[in-house]
Image 1: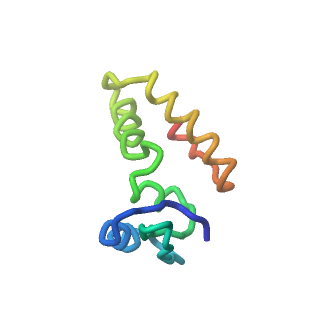
Image 2: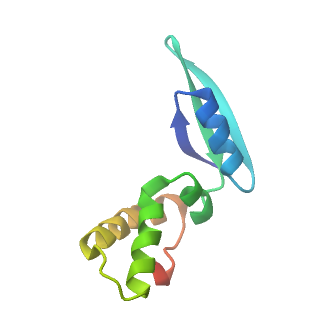
Length: 100
């Protein structure tokens, strides 16, 4: 399990916890006078997508537009892919070929 996200709001953290598949855990920590919630889970593309991280929902739209032959923001598409390259290294994932 890896730290996937940190939240200030307990209810928001609990909703995110329910979205995750596989092993998961929500941990609360006190930081000065605030409580923060750390969400741990399996770093899969599905889980990262469900959390809305790294512009994955937008990437899905862009890939679908491209597949249909519609106009799409190719520059934004490449920008997201550049970000995902660092995610690959951090979590040991591989960007699926059809996203490229």
